[in-house]
Image (cartoon, rainbow, N blue to C red; front, side):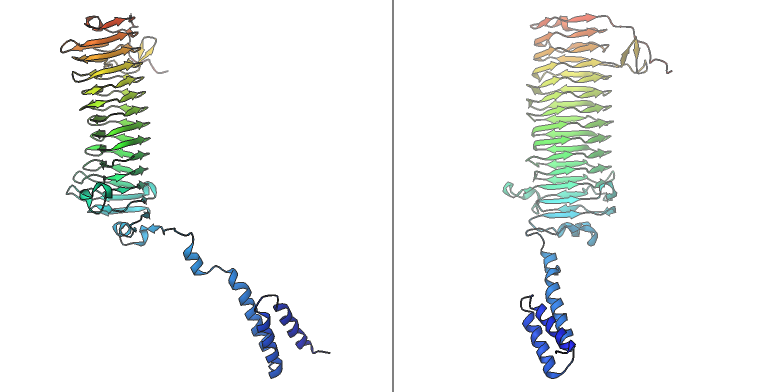
Length: 448
């Protein structure tokens, strides 16, 4: 009969053979142990080897953790660097993600991002980049390492800026200056109090997008689009910049669903740009004009905007082949729509020109705040004015200025409580105009 210890050794050795390569090794230790009379030392040592061989392959190694998804690039956490610029410099040429932590970060010279396929992401308004430079320098520059000298074939592509706040001062430059970046995407960024433009996109030609941004209190233009193409500006708020938005020398602006308020100059200024739409925006209390088309604009549509309490409404300085439709012009100080001598081939349809009348002979605004303007045609030609309502506007529903305007169709319009020059039109067609007396308006109704 075998001693109990020897039986246990053999059972252990037998069971260990179920793990390939372990059984023979442990059996040899047991045999050596018996031959040399060392008791259970070899068995204990053998058991440790079995455990190691069985368990270690199931544990993740450091190499496995580091390798991860093939092709994945590490996220660059700016909190681990001495400065934001150092984190930007760590982005490889092929691009990557730089995450900015919450905090206020003062800078005295521009941050410069020079790689494409890169995403600079903050922690919302909690990430505050404060530009204290007083020499006209911007807070953030995005451009090729060669700057403006980079040939077109080397312009950068696909840079995203999101979820941080940039502020400056009266003597600083632009908030964000992007130079020749194709498919730039700016989202959820707050840009305020800069001495230049809030955001300048300089020849960011292909598909620039700006959405969900807050652009306020900048000394110059809130969003300045120069030489851009296929542009989307959506769901952003502009307040108390000099002008809200410029789009010069570009193509195909789609500006929808934005809120513009309290600008010191004009709202939207579009020059030398075609094939664009400005629709579904609220533009209120600009000291200047709400929308301006100038310098060879053509093929643009201005539709379904609320244009309220501005110094002027839509001013077609130099525009052809454009439509002004379904807008509401309320409480305009002067010229809700003006078509100038250098403009023509314009349709003005389905708009409402009104004051603050709310029915029952009452107006919502104070009696001394009843300014409401209509349509002005100034030495122009080839204009269709149809299906509009002009109610209680001054000085006239249609005012003619300068030399006689020609080839004007004025039809199917409703005129309430207004004077109008439409009967003075020459070489034109006037038909189906309904003119009615309005209710006498009093001040706002007493509150109950």
